[in-house]
Length: 184
Image (cartoon, rainbow, N blue to C red; front, top):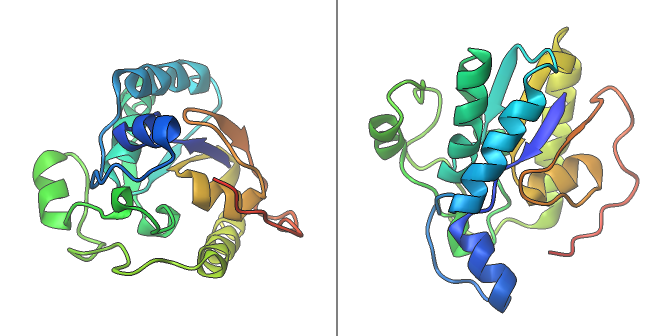
């Protein structure tokens, strides 16, 4: 499968500059983030993607949108690939609000409040990533799946820290990373 970290969000812009939580709930992409999404869409155009899974956070949906348009592939919403809940930006938008903003997507499979209400320990995210790895490995078309996700989830799945807009392949049938170092 291909893992893509969402483009730069309003949170990323401010947090990178100050190393402090700017208090933005479910932030949108910045202009740079939209450029990163468009660049990813062009780069992924010929990768044989037949399925797109995206986190329900707005920044992931905005990143997935130009790719889905370019490929003519619908986006499936999957909260298992969401970010680790640790900052204000990890407070999502309710399903009802997402459904109104993104009528082309099916949000019926998620709860209205689909994110955790308290900080999520790293080992819980690693466990969630392990469950996702197992689920993906069982699918015959995992190699043609794009997953639009987040720094913490991708780190938990691969052991690698990725920058906004970066993508890489991940074989879910391979052993998981032996050690994961959480440094944000």
